Image 1 (spheres, rainbow, N blue to C red):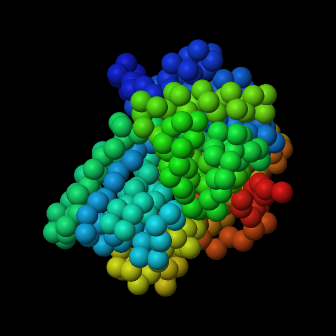
Image 2 (image 1 turned 30 degrees about the horizontal axis):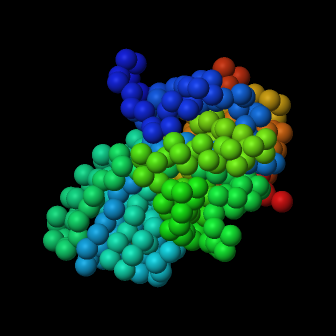
Image 3 (image 1 turned 90 degrees about the vertical axis):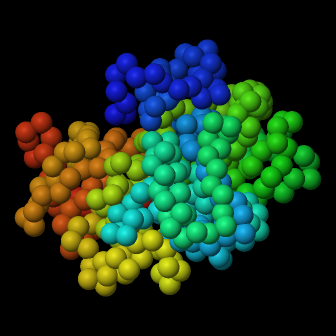
Length: 368
């Protein structure tokens, strides 16, 4: 689950002790000691789809751009439309190098007229910060870039009952933000940024809080959720996002893969002048040589990252694979030569044998 070196000193999130108390199985992930599972991945996955789950995602990074040129600086690096993002809005987008490869995929929060918050992947905080400062220095814009990761806790409350659980801890007259919007408010006595977003395909909130207040927030949410709320670890988070075909950096996205071949064209606001735009325009016009596709395997064998995809047009590679509890099938994401349509029959090499699979439309799971 992680490439962290054995024996490396692992960091702990503000809620780490609560995971240990709950009996979670811990694992190294992006330099942190993180809960992979509490009861079973299957039970936690199903709880999120049917009721609600609570995730600790405090390992994620938070970088703030502040100053008169914060928006201009953000638009230079962010692939989506920054200028059209009003305060209180959230957008997903990519940070790309000049060649079009992806530095990271991030969530952008317009937190003020002259302020932007970027939520970045845990493993990329240092590299993204360095890259942002390099771009910023070259542009000589009036903008400060601050790393607030250590001072920030982040938990995700996800599932059909998530909003109802949170409502117990919010003011009676609080109006839930629309999806892809956020609100600054007080939840269980903790000042939070409450974002109507997530990584599971279910409704819910991602909740930013001061690191020193995250345990109080966690405890209050657990009490409010009662039997309707399950603690959920990285294992369920991965099966949930794979069912939705959401990319994971280091698997579907990296410096060697661009947003066009990953099928993320809708997050590219051409004409805004972001880094990598010229290369991506050319790629869009010419067409990519490979495409990220969804695969459904026969039987219950699981295709793991790195497994070879066999086709008459050449080999591809699996980037993510799991058994999808909500779809009752073995599913995978992977890159194959461009030109295949849904329904095409391929094979994945598993333990020296070719397992039949078909390209299918994504997401694999469609919320009812």
